[in-house]
Amino acid sequence: MGHGAAFDLVHNSPGVEQVTVADADLKKAEAVAEAVGTSRIDAHHVDAANHSDIARLMTGHDSAISCVNYWYNESLSRAAIETQTNFCDLGGNNYVVDAQLALDDDAKAAGINIIPDCGLAPGMVSILAMHGAARFERLDEIHIRVGGLPQRPEPPLDYQLVFSVEGLINEYIEVARVIRNGEIKEVPSMTELESLEFEGFPPLEAFQTSGGTSTLPDTFLGKIKELDYKTIRYAGHCEKFKAMIDLGLCSSEEIVADFVKVKPRKVFGELLQKHLPADGPDYVLVRLEFVGTGLAAGPQASSPASPQGGETARLRYDIVDKLDPETGLSAMMRTTAFPASIIAQMMARGEVLARGATPQEKAIDPEKFVAELARRDIRIMES
Image 1 (spheres, rainbow, N blue to C red):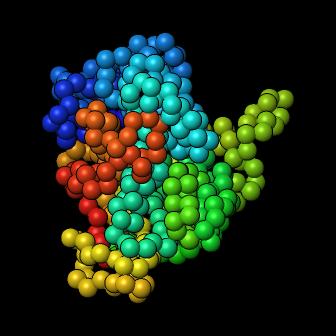
Image 2 (image 1 turned 90 degrees about the vertical axis):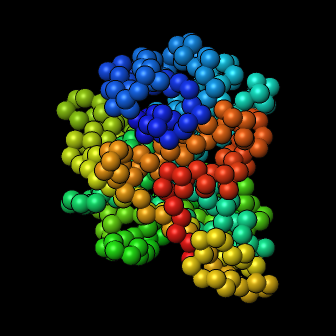
């Protein structure tokens, strides 16, 4: 994801003057800089857990993007405030996001933006939710479905690792936050399985996972009746993975095996990285469905007539992205890293609606954001 963000900043963003890419493994940072291929990018060594080194590196930058594991993002946000550097990240954990948003007063005093959860989901879909919601006189429901899928699925899970394995496990075991009957509820992950179809794809399924709604339940509380997020996978994935969760393989509680203390989650994560394919050609599927009344027609609508007044209207946004063979960037890199890069640049240019630590759906102009996605050939199919 760091590679994807650096690529976008250098090759898709004419206003960017200089980019720094940093990693605990300098060779990885240097490999990214070499792959991006420009004199406008520098590679540095930095440990995300070392506050003083992070602050020293951030100093002098207009924006910083965190593409590391979610548990670093609160301390990185504090370093951004200290150095007056706009900051966004790829998120993935509701509790960390809450801690970041609690820094609102400090971020305002520093005159910067802290915007968590700026990847794909949570991330891009939050701004698309606002984009679609604005089309209705009265909105009742938002249903979000997102998944990263291998183009050539392999058993037993028909899945490949396209981002952090820790992030994947976290999504599958923590509770999901939804709006039900106008109230915020918590729902167990890996439940409420449903079937869905995308043209040209084999049977698919979707199920509850944590983190995808991010701050949307709070933003839409009192405004709509239903809001939920589910992850898309090839049919059969949920049952297989949930069986391993039920057996305790995702538990962080230590057990003793051959007189050695181990955490099953750590062992399971290592096994997933060892045995699951990674970095093969992929798809990203996104679907947002809106239900309400008084729908205004959009420029991409497939149907010219939209119900008005009190008649129930339904709006669907679909995105199907895939590996770009010209750049070598996967669909997950494009749809996760590019949105973070767009937001980092909007912060640097002062185009964010308000300073402080703010949910992206409240801070980012959805029309400008969607236009930037389209410029990168990430396009909404509307019906």
